[in-house]
Length: 459
Ligand code: 5AD
Ligand code: SF4
Image (cartoon, rainbow, N blue to C red; front, side, top):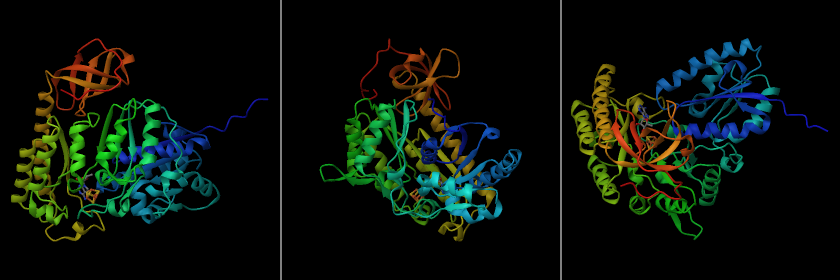
């Protein structure tokens, strides 16, 4: 007797925004796989399309609505045989607007509802109109999501924390992702072990406010992120640990110490500062001053001298003056960032900053952003050039752009290209850096390679 294969269906997921959304998209694919959904890149053959959306700035939200317009035509071309789902933070914040503006959408689901997807798909098949799930349920969605079985590359994401209680003046995250929640230690360790068994050598721990993570250790003690990192570093085969995104106020002493005593914790930290002006930082409700941030950077560099820093900057927050902008440029110069993201302030409905007096004119915001970006670009290029001549431990992630070329990343997260055999994928190898470019490095294998069980700290 032969088994009847489950009907094959095709699933297309489009992901915007942060790494948390990339992780969530992978989880949604996992949850739908048992229903027969296999991934596709082609919208024409998709039985289901999920837009995993970002609400953080206005532009990201607009793109969702224009994509929905195009999907309407694709759905019509298939005689209506396409389930269209909107997930992520736009779904959470604008569920009603989506159903009003795009009634051809079948499902609207917030980030806490992904484990309900199969049930929602079934309900959509029966129901007329849109099925909406945007509650913040009290149950732990992580308990209901299946274990990942998809083969992993050398690098993987692992969500350990969600939500944020900081309420920065400009930010929608506390409203779309809800209040802070930390996953338990045992669940995190088990998922990390599974990812490593599937081939991951580097894990990036994710959270909107990841360094606010806290939990109870197996010893009954209160753990914060430094202790968790040390525990994960004990996993055989896990060579590298990173975490993002952090708030300066949650960088506790133990986490700073862990950067010094845990070689697997990579010497790269994304630590958003947003502004270098104390006035603006106060209006932003950040809870720290520019001097506090600089002091933190000093302590981190004392713990791990080769630490490279990345940040987020917002240009043109309401009330920002030329002097405040100059203070931001001064802070950037003082720190010297290896990488950074910078954004023009975008008023988000429902946030305190959106109704503050002193909204900055578009042209002024544009000019300030251009200055910030020029400075950050120069710093990034300078940092990349400063890697030339070093022998860096490179985690090989896969083939490079050209035949015979491999790609990987340094401890400082720079993409690096070098000539090498395909079997290096998944290994950490020494690469002599020959040149630093604006966005990547090029190098050459520094020694005949052998599989290395554990990485030593970078020189
Ligand atoms: N306008 C511009 N940038 C924003 N960010 C968050 N909200 C806004 C906004 N309303 C930026 C912050 C944050 C990053 C993820 O996005 O710099 O750290
Ligand atoms: Fe948003 Fe980050 Fe501030 Fe939380 S800490 S409100 S996620 S900018």
